[in-house]
Structure formats: structure tokens, C-alpha cells
Length: 438
Image (cartoon, rainbow, N blue to C red):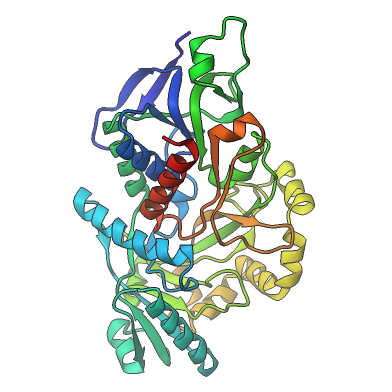
């Protein structure tokens, strides 16, 4: 029985097209930037296959993709020769190239990583050497007078100038990926929240669909689609989706909320490009920074505090199930104990604007509490192992039994996934081809 689905055609193409589709060769679960980039890469590599994307929301790219800072990262932070470093450097080049081809606006405004204390300078120099090893373009160490030339209101003893860093609206990029995918023949099914993934039950007649499309994907409404292979890129729900096919629950996804402040429009002249602190390797996040946006706003932040709900964008969003999973099943307690002072400081800054402003004034002394407003919030899907370690590398999984031969779960596509999305998608497409022998 053919089931009618509605597929939204994104971009500048017509609004809605009705799709008669009961089966696909490949289904991608997740309509964020990694899922859409992967769908695009797969259909360009395998144009004869029928490929579909299912997304639980009515729109695409509305969670991590639509709530991030918009920074095109250069790749300076990551361990040399690591996959993250290679994919970020490669991905940034591909994003700039893609935006030029598609005429998507961006601003290569650069970034300064600024040391404001003498004790930070050795870490800054080590970071500079790491960036050189990673092949980041145009890096240079600059001193006070050159910092002032780049950022007239910023104070600092020494800084790394990263001219290759930029900003872009990643949701626009993701929707462009969706348009490319659909123009190449792909189908997008929104309002399709996956509830189960299982092998098709054999009937006495052994239907053609049951033989050629052995995987059944069911949504929360009880609707089904069938396919040969599944690739999941489910972000904040990647662990739960992977468990549907019998995967080990680890690593668990722990949601961290990042709250941004916004500089009032009349004070935006204080910041020209990205301004970042020198990261402290003892702590898991980069620290509060200054980020210009494509709409002309300046975001300040984010902090990093535990969210009590996946997709919990407001401070009092709460899910009993999510909290119990975090406390009982993840390594969060160990992470908290290892980083107690950092976590307590982040919570304090989240509650009291004065504490955040005091930190920001280390870089731009002119900023006052009256110059800022509370801004948007994002939630980061942080993979965490049972020992409380942040999982910084890619995690692929499949499951057990026959179903494991038909599924690839992307359980962790680590930050900066948006910058690296085109490079990540090529890696995922290669992994799909190798595993499924396409």
C-alpha cells in the first residue's frame, strides 16, 4: 500500500510537492546540517538510488544548526593529525567555496585569541604552534599595538590573529544543502518523528517490499516507511535512536545549554570581529567570547551549563526522563567532580550578569551591564562516556543481529560539526559505501 507523504522543497524552488513513497534505498534520520550534508553527498555520489530524509520537526535545521554561533572555525584548537583538526580545516575551505558558489552571504571577519594575563602567553604560543601544525591559513602572533589596529577597544598583551575565521548563517547553508538534495531527486519528510527501527516481519508470501526493503521505520503516529539502509544523524537524540537497533547505550548524550548575551545596537561598534579568550585545557569548553552575527548583532558568550531537558532552551525547561538518564546512566557525576569549580563558576555567571560582564571587561573595559541584554540560547549534544570523559572523536555504530548490517548510526559528530559539515558528509558517504557495499 502506497502511503502519501508531503515533502517540502526548500530554497527558491516551489513550496510543496506530494510524494508517493513507501520505500527508499537509503533513509537518513535527522534534518540538521550533518544529516542534510550527508544526504546531499550520498545522492550526488549515487544518483540512481532513492534516498529520503526524515525529520521530526515541521522545519529543517531548527535545533543545534539553528541555535549555534555561526562561526566558521579555522581549526586551530584541535590536536594535530586528529580527525577533528583535518575535517575542520578542510570543512572551512569547503564552506567558503560552497557559499561562493551558491551566493550565500558570509563575512570572513577574522578572529583574535587574546591573552590578557602574562600567565596565558605560554598557552597562547602553544596554541599558535598547534594551528601551524594543523595547516590553518594566515596565522600570526601580534602584540598590543596590532591588537588595537584590529580591535580598537580590545586590550591584551598578545594575540593570535586568525584571519581565516568567518561567520555565516548555518541554517541558510543547511537549507541550501536540502535544496541541492531535492533537486538531485531526494525526498524530505518532515513531521516524521522516528519511534522504531526494525526488520520487516516476514509474511508467507514474502512480499517484494519485505525482500528488497527489509528495514521498517515507524514514527510516533504509527506511519511506516521501508528501506534497504538507514543512516542516523540525530544530534541530541543520537543515543536513543541508536538503541532502537540494539546498540550499546554508551556514549550517552548529555545536553549542555549555552546562554548568549547580546550587545545593544548602539554599542556594537565596540567589536569588529570574533574575540576569544585563550582556552584552558583543564576545562572542556572554549570560554565566553565575542561573536559578530550576519544581521549586525554582537553575541557575547556562551556559558556552558547542564540543561535539564534535551532541547531545553529555557532555564526552567525540565524533563524527568532526561534528568534521570543523565544522573543514572551517564558519567555526568564524574565529570562534575572533575570540573567542579568550572561548573560552579558557569552556573554563577548564568545567574548573575555582573559576573559575565566582569569577565568580558578583561577584553573590552568599556562594556557595562547597561550595554547588554539577555539573548538566544543553544543546546549542545555532548557525548559522555561512563568515566565522565567528553567524547571528542567520531562514534559510528550499527547494532546487533541482521539489522546491524543495514544501519549506520552517527552517534557523535563532534564540534565544530557545522564548519566541518561538508567534510564530515564525505566521510560518512565513504563509510556508507564501504559498509553497505553500494
